[in-house]
Image (tube, rainbow, N blue to C red; front, side, top):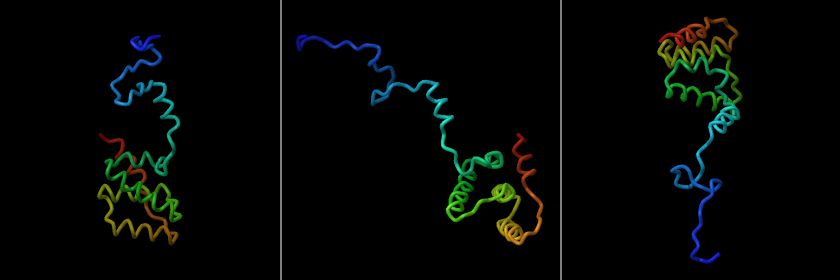
Length: 123
């Protein structure tokens, strides 16, 4: 082939999107596979409780969970419900701290989980 010959692109190497790097567009099956392969996070088991919150409030609690995880904290759902209740203004920070102390002392205290879940269901 001479140097003057032109190169024609075949369907296998044709660029079909506007990506500046020329990467092909992701197939929807690739995206579905990514969703299934998503790495679980520390907050996944509390997703229903956290869904009541704004993104900023949710991130605040996830940060507390992350730090607590490395300090050996494994919170109950009731403890997370308290954090959510605090974020929503249902508990003052002092009340939430007092409830934490009461739990550690073995006292039984009212659980905010049902109230948090009920709030999630309301429009």
